[in-house]
Length: 205
Image (cartoon, rainbow, N blue to C red; front, side):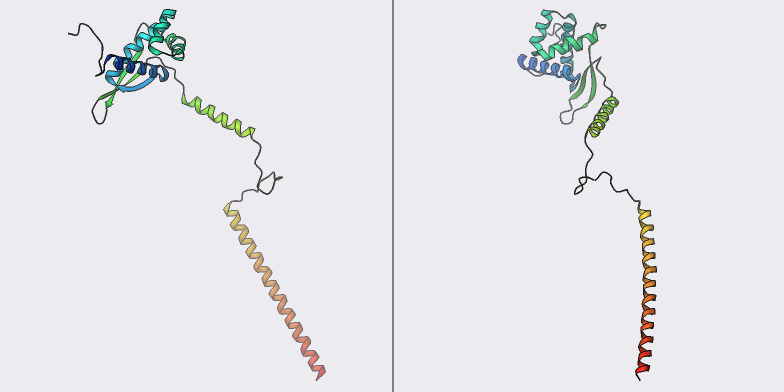
């Protein structure tokens, strides 16, 4: 018979079950939100609540009991200094289990296990900080010099395509006018030379 036992066996023996729950609680305290199977989340939530209640006591015996489960000083410092003070005004309900869709393949129900009071960091602040850091880096870097011109300070101005087209049209018209003037001058020179030749031929005859 059950006799008020709340243990979830999870198809594992005692040692494997304890190791699984410890790893789930560690990842919960590190990330403050994890996704796993529903039964595992329910089993890990009870252990996480016990550890948070130990963190609220903040005594040497409580730290020793937490070390036996978590096994690292970093996790204990985070539990006693960061996570437990958030729940000072609460008497329970430190974790939350939310249902998700069934898993493809075996159809097992998944869930999200999270702390009820988490540190919410807005994404906008992160984006703004990243932009400021990029701008500072750009301002700190010296201006780029053109290849082959170490002393070049200013780049060539950008000419829009319409202005380029008009400039090319003007150039072509000027070239046509010059060609016309050249051809007319050549014709005049040729006519003058022909007249001189005829004049000298007449005298010689």
